[in-house]
Amino acid sequence: MALREHTDREYEHELRQLREQLLVMGSQVERIIGDSIRALQDRDEGLAKQVISTDRAVDRMEVELDGLCLQILAKRQPVASDLRFITLVLKVVTDLERIADLGVNICERVIELGSEPPLKPYVDIPRMGIDVQAMLRDVLDALVAKDPEKARQTIEKDKVVDALYAQVFRELLTFMMESGSNVYRATRLQSIAKYLERMGDHTTNLAEMVIFMVEGNDIRHLESRGEDPASESTKN
Amino acid sequence: MTTIQDTQHAPGTLTVQDLSVHYGPKQALNPVSMLIPGHKVTALIGPSGCGKSTFLRSLNRMNEMILGCKVNGKVELDGEPIYGAGIDPVRVRRRIGMVFQKSNPFPKSIFENVAYGLRIGGINDKQDLSEKVERALTQAALWDEAKDRLGESALGLSGGQQQRLCIARALAVEPEVLLMDEPASALDPIATAHIEELIHELASRYTVVIVTHNMQQAARVSHHTAFFYMGDLIEFGATNTIFTKPQQSKTEDYITGRFG
Image (cartoon, each protein chain N blue to C red):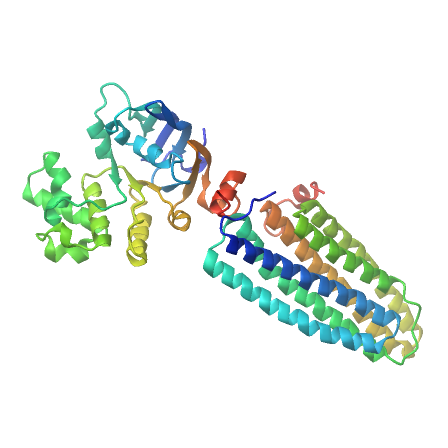
């Protein structure tokens, strides 16, 4: 969908500004995911605190982007793909901000785990982190490239993250059954795994929005709307 | 043919088949086929010179008044042809009325403006005239403002009131279709809002076809939108779809402001 530029350059500039700021916010959130996992692996409290302060910048960006969207809606009365893009931004920032908050939650658990010796070598949790981070990167790429296929792949990838979470959960359960002294650390790790799983869900939301922006088809909740989700999945 | 399936059989349906228009050697409208649903509002949009007003005027044979203009193809109102030997264009225009961009009341009283077409049609009974004038003014949402000054000159009305008077004048002869060529472009936002609200109400009794340069207006008032470009009908569909997810890239470019 190669669109020409707007006749009104000021409008074109506003839309470009919106796109750029959204990507800046997205890359910040991507970094928060990576850093929070690194803080866990390296037991780095300093890094965890740094992530928590980065989150404030993300909060600010959310407010700024919302403001920009409202301005464009009020002044330009956008339609068609422009309208879908702006409503997408309004929703995307909410999910991005949630993902960043979950990154903060991970760091809070990391700080709690602080001086405790690691329960076990971390394998699956960092894998979840890497996957979720890659999902977010792909969704942002799909947004820029207006590539619905890439967005669909992201949705598929979330199933891997869900499976990893189930595995981590089972494993931590056995640790807790083994010894009561493991419970404090195991519940923290379980929370972290849950946060990552939630990040995957938010990223899936983003992917669905990208598909809507490009194709104009809302693929959310197909079953509850009485439509056949299989007709959507055949597009994969 | 571009059709809107669900409303095909409502009264006041216009069927257009291979309608093309030449002004002298120049083709202003390439063959267009579409079905304009009855008792709905259809908006025609497109840049200047795209053929939308030419198309509109062809729907009640107004183009014939232009020297050198030649119309080909078929237009039918509820299956009855509009063009053809032996079909009286005056009768056609009674069934398919028109309202123009600039309000053009006659320099007569408000009452006489509305009664004009009725008198020409042979109605002279005072009671009958009064009833019909009141009904037309009521339908045009002007009755409350005009009822105490029916004998005053129509030229004393405001611009928005004059335009509603012209709508009342068109409605007085009880047409089935109302064509509107930019009916609100010369009005302020409040008068425009009155006209738009009126268009909504008219759709319950009449088929309305409106040409507008104001895309937000097309989005607000119409059920279906047709986009014309360089003499071609590019896309015709539900207004909700055209303004959120048009099928053609030319439509997308035009409505989002990426033209020229």
